[in-house]
Image 1 (cartoon, rainbow, N blue to C red):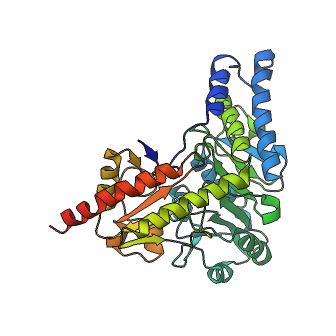
Image 2: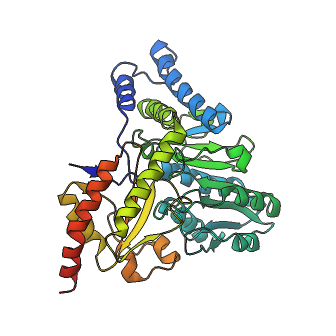
Image 3: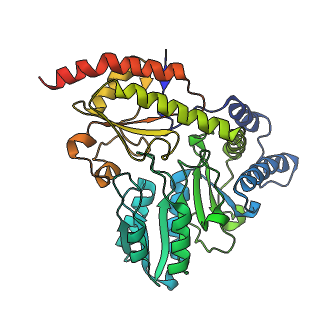
Length: 384
């Protein structure tokens, strides 16, 4: 039996997604910039996906910009947003638990002379609103906060953050990395005061190498990729029609029977938590189960190194993560786990278990049974 619980790293493509990707690669393969019939067919796939996403977010179709994925969306929002508005100020804000696709652009901008404030989080991984309120200034031009933390599943109070940003720093853009949130929450950027929203396809059973950035039509962003002027000059380069078509299908599917699917995720999470209690000396990090993201669990198996546990479970066909798989294979102490107060020893004993709608209770039970067999042996070995 196999049990794949690394869905925050990537998900299996839906069969319907695979089918439309193949169709647009082998049959409707035209260049959407071409003026003939094949080009128009390809352009229609792009347009339909934009319409689907706009409808889900309750925004305008022209506010959807397709990218190569979450990293590009984050980079374009942050660097492009700051460069387009640099005359307004020199101060930018983010949190201590952001993904590297946000943290690294901020580090780059700091090197360029921008003043960066990094907000602390509480022991659950939630940003401290009082720290944000104190940090906001008239010359703040961008605030970037993730919706759901990719390691511990903490859910940020995006609504309250948006209100604070626009009240205290009306010139600032509010960017939200929704890469772990899209498909798990109903997100309406205009209602939440979000100016820029990043999404990745392969987190929602779509193809890898594609995503999108919502850009409020009133917001100015400096393009980072120049060339043929595709997508109204915001991102040059031939559109990835198969990826975009697959993303549209995946997005529509994940939001079909949405409440039922989310409840299933919470039920899986609860079943896993109950099984973990039986192991002893195990800590589930982050927010309470029913308050955190439905699909992410951060678990510390005290006395067992996470990488050793990962490879042990792998031998039994159980797949989890020893941290975010969206960065390189180099293992550095997790900034998120450190920020919520875990010791270096506990950081090195923490894994992420992440679910998707296709997971079953049988898979959870198999994972628990495998852990019951493995953990005592690994702890005994570690004490030698």
